[in-house]
Image 1: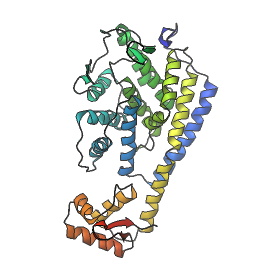
Image 2 (image 1 turned 180 degrees about the horizontal axis):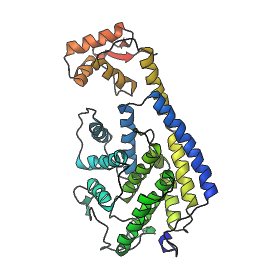
Image 3 (image 1 turned 120 degrees about the vertical axis):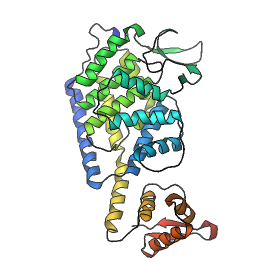
Image 4 (image 1 turned 60 degrees about the horizontal axis):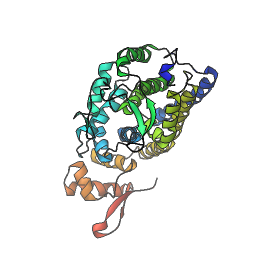
Length: 360
């Protein structure tokens, strides 16, 4: 029996003592990370990579591949960072819904807002080769909304969503909880995520929008202007488990303890896996502290920041001139100045000449 057919639907419940233990551990890890990052400082290039990863992985969970460079460029433009790679409407739409969730996390969640996200995800009105209803509830005109796998003729039905005729009423209950419940924001992140997947109110993109809704409540819990971890990236790492726990919960009772525990454990893993980012931020902070008395011009600061944040390829004078939009002579003067200050060192010869950040 599907969960929404339970007599008391949608009165979810859980074993409080079990969930609270997990919640306390996540809060502890969350507080430690936020405190560490706020102390060290956090820059736009670091957030750029976190947000790019979130957009990419949220789509990959559904088997949708987005161009990495286009996503990074789209996120960068919206953060005010100049990156010249163009991006198409589908990429911009996927980026827009994540940034709207994160930047406007205090705004009310409404049908209209979610429909606007749906329009952003499917700007042409097509999902692949198939025309879909965009910016409105599904109609079930082609039959019940089902989650299936397998070849045509041998499909396995994993889940069948509530009939479309019930969606207006069901969605009102969903929005009331999302906007008015007094539950902790991390609990709400998990419940809203699951509830949206249960309703499956749209023709396509339900998973991506469920994860965007999750970002709203994670941001409300963090209360930080930056994103330090990616829940979507962590879900992607355990995608099979994700689908299994969602399916099991959709077919179970209104006791969603197992789902909440899985969600909180996955969130804690996402926070823990940000250790590498924390270490990189510490490295960046150490560099600027060590060189606090050295003067740098804006071009030099820009390139050094890029080198500290996973610069792609080798740094040449030609790349310097292109990135900083300056002449080759200016680029060479900037580089030689940094060599004299023991910030950069020359490597290679002739056409292979490039420059490295000195160990510090």
